[in-house]
Image (tube, rainbow over all chains, first blue to last red; front, top):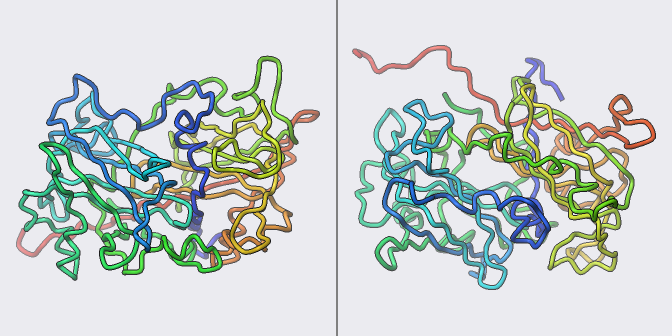
Length: 202
Length: 238
């Protein structure tokens, strides 16, 4: 439908449903598909930066793990540049995709990414934000994909103007990963409840 | 540069109790409004070279040699647009769907309807310079699903779209005009605005129909547009 000014209206979201693997991770879903699953590999030997892993799980309001979620991440390279499109500061590391996609494990619900620690990216007013990884989560029962961010423990988060927007300061902790071993970060996401993760209206 | 806000009159709310799965999977605290930064204004790039020759043809891309999928042959085509009506080129579009009997090729789908050995249900393509895209497939069937005692999904195709920014990321579903199950479906009805539901309903497109081959359905997708910036705001004195 057109409005009086001629702008089009946004196509509404619908849930990704329980069978999203067929379209988003077809190899993982067991299809005879001639390509590697998109976002399955983010780095190669040539990628610059500190290797890290990110594991975690998405939980429902009963704190049960979602076994049918799809988690996508998007991040800057080690220099803080987003690979290849839209970043006015350059083209970034040609050996880093910046994009990861992982279906939660059908038994445990865990997701896992092998990536590099991102550099700092300028935020509102050009003020540098603390290093972070952007997350987008879809699943059966999620009507509109959920945006959140993962920050790193031990970083100084005090000057981050995105985190400064969070009115209830104790909720910032929901965005900070745990470091379980050097370079092994773990990020639990809660859709509801007292530990509900901060989700962003982007 | 930034994007227009998500139109919350068009998108479904997180909690829509008639769709029972949303009850325990919907955030209950308000989302925190975030000024889009480079982390949201940029997005992954997928080149046309990642698309194989049969990726957009679901009638053959999981079929045995010399076979094709069972079901009414269809073409689904349209444009990826922004709110200003501009085509969005180079958008990756991924689709997935049930077969003609309403059965998905998925471990968790135990519906009585049989699998089709020649149908996988996965397709993908990248929009052209005008934002146009096209798939060839078979018409998916409706199927029952566990929600209330007797809920049926209307025939539908799932769409995942990457625009040019992570902020534009969208997953949705396309329905077929005239399907009487659309109005009964609790997932469709998570969307409060009937016009918004109508925008998910593909139209029969006889102009694009291939005679003696496949019926065409037209489905355009509108992503968030860029917000116009007429004047740069600068703090006084700079």
